[in-house]
Image: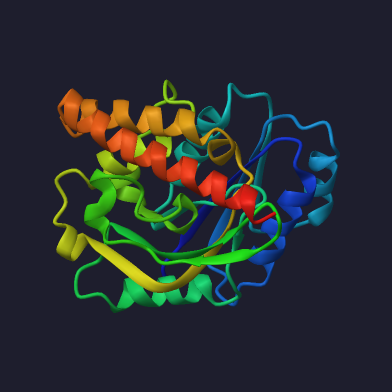
Amino acid sequence: MTPFSIVTISWNNLEGLKQTYESLRAQTYRNFRWIVIDGASKDGTLDWLQSLNEANAEITCEPDKGIYDAMNKGLRQAVQTPGYTLFLNSGDSLADAGVLADVAAAIEGAAVAPKFVYGDFFRREPNGYMRHTTARPIERVRVGLPASHQTMYFENERLRGMSFRENYKLSADYCMLIEFLDGLDLGTAVICLQRPLCIFDATGVSNMRRFEAIKEDMQIRMRFLKYSAVKAFALYLAHYLHTHSKIVRAALNR
């Protein structure tokens, strides 16, 4: 059976953490560790976690230096065992009770053990609307994330030794994906599942500060994909206009 390490970071988001936990508790596939990295919350999170008596949970509660510092703590703990790691933040959920079973079946049924698995997702908008978003081809990584990072399962052997670059405050997950995929045969090393794998909470920090995030994306493409300044800026401008148009449409539809 394929083992999973599921890393959940949280800070003063007890209700969101409870949603994440309920989606894990509902899984029919039970071969997973739940690694919770809490940034010393003051909202009762630690008391609630300790009350769970959850055998799968590994809890760390201490101050951190931000989102990606917390995710790196979880990453270092996750890769100590074999299998695959998923980063599922507090407030995010697995899409249904069969997600882990389906991901495990895809991995175990592959002719070559994949290094990376991802898929579709539901995007939960601030108004509660659930939008089904189809994962894009993995080659799209050169222009942006092909799906939300909450659908992405990283093979631990390759993930070991990697980390989120904390100088990027909003797009370190994008940067890490580019580095993780570098040099892989994308045709055999990657599996894309055409079914929703998670419910992504669109009220997170990177979405609330989307214009800052796409600027970081531009910097990452120049450094790690060797894009020219002109090409990188052209893509930045396209993302900027697309994001602006979505904000305008959302405002008009209220």
